[in-house]
Image 1 (spheres, rainbow, N blue to C red):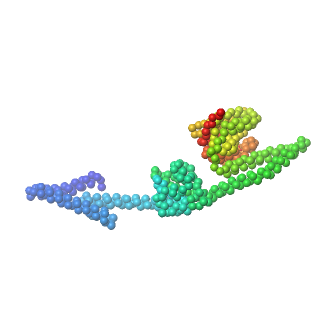
Image 2 (image 1 turned 90 degrees about the vertical axis):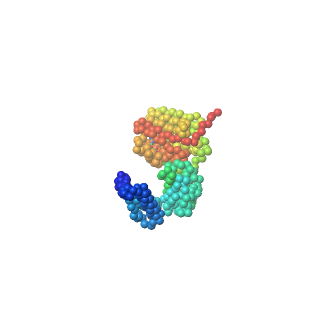
Image 3 (image 1 turned 45 degrees about the vertical axis):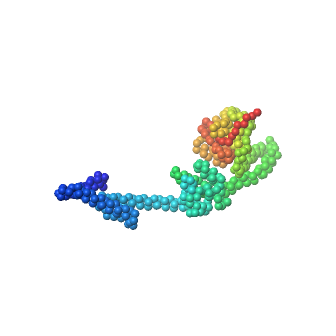
Length: 432
Ligand code: ADP
């Protein structure tokens, strides 16, 4: 039914009612009375229809609209259509909510839907088991009242939910949970808690294994090294002299590998870094500059250091020395003769910025993401020749992660590489 059609039919209905009344009034010479009577009847009919509509809307059990006459018929039918549409929409919405809940129930993680003020709106069946939430008793409670660990409260208030948070389960001390918070509309958030206890235990077992194996290899290696040092090769026995040389080289390589593995497991097992400790990075770098010059002289490398005077960092000195020396020695090892290395440590708006640039062979893009994996080497032969084991950059990655930083690498094949990182916690000390 179009708008004009509705208007015209209402108009015709009025004409059909008032024109005969008017004619009757003319005939009996009582036009005013006839029109008055017609208007009164019209008004009574309107009130009656309005009453029927009211009764139907508020008291009728049936959804079917009452019989209406004239324009009221289309009003009743219109309301009935609207009601049916709403009913259909409500049904669709209920289905969507049911599906969402069934999906959330099927997840192997605890899921809690939160409101703007972080009060609990809904949770799945795993939430009581992992977080200790009581449903439905805890509906409307602030999530911070249930997970009370300071780390979680800080995470909640920090509003930066890009990275997950690991906490001990509030109801099982032995369980480790990985918490993720996702905001999905302006005023809704979803908390997902995953049990990562087994994963962390496996990582611990792997770490212990690496540490134990490296430790156990130390004693036999020391014995071998000792005997090799004692045995002086005799020039007349060429075969023995060659074997002695190879054995000495390989034991030295193995010794370096074991030391690196031990360093890595020590850094991985290290408790939280004490950020109260000051580290004199300029002094550390001046020492390393002297050491690396020896290696550089053999290859005729040009080494330059640009160090901000008195720029101290906060953190673990031995870990930072390990990271910085690995990067500088890598640059010296992977830069061919007559190349150059440029080391900087400068204050920037983000903190202390350390970088090592070299004019070495460079690394192609596909390797860049794997560089910090343990035992990863871009070119096995080249790395082995230079005494590499593929552990150095893993150490760097862990040290930086312990210091809330990350390693940035840019490189171009045959042009060179740049390894850098930023330490946010620094201070400048005036030297007397
Ligand atoms: P490695 O002990 O083998 O040097 P790292 O973990 O320190 O182990 O480095 C991993 C790999 O990254 C190396 O094998 C090497 O191929 C590559 N690499 C590291 N630093 C550089 C660099 N400055 N220039 C070119 N390649 C590099």
